[in-house]
View (cartoon, rainbow, N blue to C red):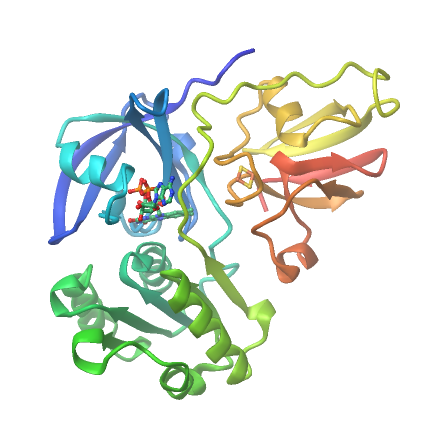
Length: 349
Ligand SMILES: Cc1cc2nc3c(=O)[nH]c(=O)nc-3n(C[C@H](O)[C@H](O)[C@H](O)COP(=O)(O)OP(=O)(O)OC[C@H]3O[C@@H](n4cnc5c(N)ncnc54)[C@H](O)[C@@H]3O)c2cc1C
Ligand code: FES
């Protein structure tokens, strides 16, 4: 059994965004900048030391920086009441520290930066949305509308940054703030009224569970189709991908019949590999030395998602890809078993 060497990042700066949210500005610490290429809206998985949990736990944090606009990576961590990882990071991490992370991953990212976007965020849900918003404004041509809900004015993460973007991009950016202290909790009818003019846009939604449910229902009622709505759910990982062993693929013919083959496009290279019937695709890739992305390894997070170009595979578990993702050919490599004898997949699409 082996485990992979994680990547490392150095904390260049810690920014106190609000009373309970800290941003970490990061740079690759081990000369592996190419491993940190990311798309707007993707996340890093951070190793958080924990003696109680047998060494460490892993937590995902969205990159709020823009790959098109910012030189450094940035994540913003909001304290969760009684939470372990978020409080450890906010209490302990200081400038100069080195953190272990997994490479950026995730499917909460627009296909095009030129589409008109409706972004709905609440609380720390602004982090991936901020990356999408500033990337589209900076490198795309579409207009962006942000509905942003918070407890009160003091808890609005990126308040000044957003105001500066409004000044810079004028009519291309519309921000509707919803403050619970002033307007009470957002209601479905209020969200419907606010979002109705944007029902033809592509929507991205991120925030606490009740906000996501309310918003997706409101967007559905104003006629925004499910396949134009992308959601990001913030949950804590229950597994630790930093210590998870790489299970070796079953030898050919031992179980489930002879191996099929899979051609994999990753980081600009193409490799052809045997894919034993009982082995998960991610295990096959890692055992062959490929640097395939992953995080939870449990079908929960979409970090391992790739696209099936040819052939058919089945997933043992899928808690994250929706009908639109499946229609686009997305596949969770950590859960994928081969159905056809030959497959072609890509991570580079
Ligand atoms: C893709 C993705 C991106 C994310 N991006 C961000 C981001 O940009 N910023 C951000 O702040 N967060 C983000 N998150 C959430 C983040 O990963 C953590 O889930 C969050 O910080 C809470 O972690 P924690 O360790 O502090 O809390 P945890 O210790 O995991 O606790 C979470 C809650 O569960 C309760 N709890 C813990 N253990 C138990 C138990 N055994 N039984 C019952 N209840 C329990 C705690 O009381 C607490 O209320 C993201 C998550 C995902 C999946
Ligand atoms: S690694 Fe999380 S779904 Fe596969």
